[in-house]
Amino acid sequence: MRERRKSFLPFGSPLIEQPEIDEVVDTLRSGWIGTGPKVKRLEALMCEYTGAKYARATNSCTAAMHLSLLAAGVKTGDEVITSPMTFCATANVILHCRATPVFVDIEKDTMNLDPTLVEKAVTPKTKAVMPVHMAGRPCNMQAILDIAVRHNL
Image (spheres, rainbow, N blue to C red):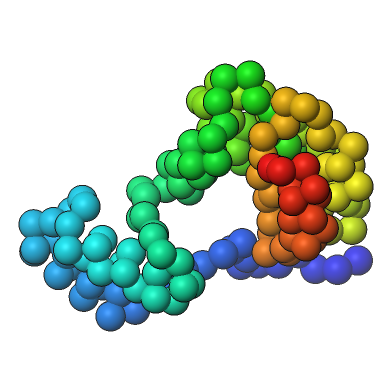
């Protein structure tokens, strides 16, 4: 029988060193703790890094997912396909748009959306697919994107 671990094993541990601490202190001293010059700089750096024309910083992934659905035109009566293996915010933002979450089962080996089942779940009401990358394992985005293009999602 294996011996039980004596120390706590963290799922994820952020690396916060002096430069990060200095940035937080600088931000607090600047008086801008919301949208301001540093947020504008972050958005510009994200555009530069990704090649995107626009970038918007949000206070949370929940807010970002909600804005993404609005940008995609999701509205009352639409369906959005997603994974049941996710935090509740994924379904909540769909509901907040007055749309219906459609849960599609996962692939057992990756715990990510099964593209074959995504394809089968598409209906005339489907407006979007919200993939969830589980535990650092990316979804098969090419297969999901191919489905989205075929169905104009």
